[in-house]
Each structure stands twice: as C-alpha cells, then as structure tokens.
Length: 79
Image (cartoon, rainbow, N blue to C red; front, side, top):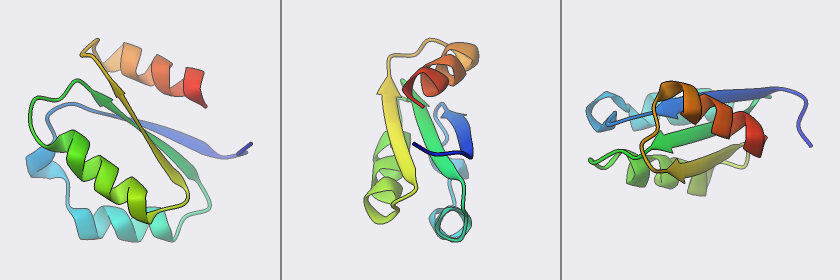
C-alpha cells in the first residue's frame, strides 16, 4: 500500500509526453503514480507502458474512453 498517490489521466497525449522529463520526475519521486490511459487512439498507451516498465513507482491502467472524470475515478478505484 502506498501513502502518497497521484492519479494522472491521459487521452491522445503522444505529442505531449516528453519521455525523459517524465522519467526524471517519476524516478526521483516518493509518490506512487497511477497513469490512466483513457482509450487513446495514438501511441499514448505504449509510451506510458514503456515508462512503467522502467519505474517501480508507476502503474498504467488502460480503459475504454469514458472521459476525464471516469479516468480519475478508475485510477482511485485501482489505488
């Protein structure tokens, strides 16, 4: 169980994901991150999975597109 959790929803963010910047933030953080891919049609899910494969404080959840609010709720349910 993690005490500090951050839920971040993503939808078609492939062009906005800076892998090196994200990896730096996630790697040096005491926070556990749950990234929710909300049915992206681009490579967002793959990029997030690549990050998760290298980080021990990060989980990716993939869901069918249900909107920002449901992505956040789904992240909390999985926390």
